[in-house]
Length: 221
Image: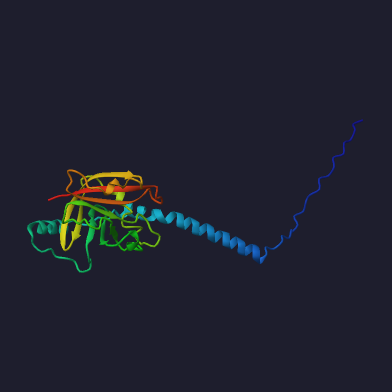
């Protein structure tokens, strides 16, 4: 006779509506604050790179023809036509689309919220021998274009720069680019063999002040 084995019946669990405790107003507010902080942090971290993306897409350039003609007029001693919408002394970097005012003052603070670039060497101009040193911001959250020197590292050896000074235009040719430490103040010195030199520098790399990116150019006829 076979022994019967009784298999216990399985108890089927019925789904029951389990009531969860409702979040309090304080916890909802805290979650909202944390989400807002996260979103703001993401935006702030991404903003410094937006001008870079814009540059790569648009590749802004300035047609140098007018400045080439103005430089020829300056050399010939004839008057240069000045655009009234672009006042003062100016720095023009055609290959990165920069045309900005050169501002005078005791320190970099004079350019405020990126109104222009700063002439650091107060006694040197394009009209005389020496090293004309110009500094500018790499990135500012308050600047619509990031900073006038945001794309300074994009300049290459052999490219031409123009400085408009006292309604005259002086061309320069880039002959060296490099990064240096902030302590390397010799970038401000005159250089033998380069009577009229232009040195531009800005913070480097992006988002850091640990180094300076330097462009060195010589005035050409």
